[in-house]
Structure formats: structure tokens, C-alpha cells
Image (cartoon, helix red, strand yellow):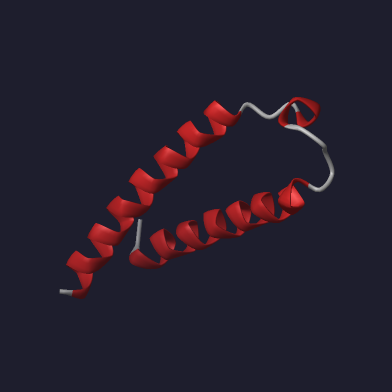
Length: 66
């Protein structure tokens, strides 16, 4: 894998994540988490995974930049 492949992979996942976030529309389509069938704990757990991944990507980028 080349550096460009890695950047392209990150860009793709960024687009996917932005599409997901836009689809929530601030929750205006449902009146409660139960109505939306949202498992808040599962979403928070996944957000924690995303944070860990972003922290690692940030660390790697800083190492690359010197």
C-alpha cells in the first residue's frame, strides 16, 4: 500500500462518516430514542472506537510530519 492509498482510504471513510452524520438531521425525524430504535450505548461505544482511531491517525501524521 502506498501513502496515497492510505490517504484515499481515509478520505473515503471521512465521506462515509459525514453522510451518516448528515442522515441524523439532529434527530428531527423522531420524537424519542425508542421511536428511532437508537441504542445510545452502542453509538457511544462506537464513538469511543472512532476517537481511538483518530488519536492514532493523528499520532502517525505527526510522526510523518516530523
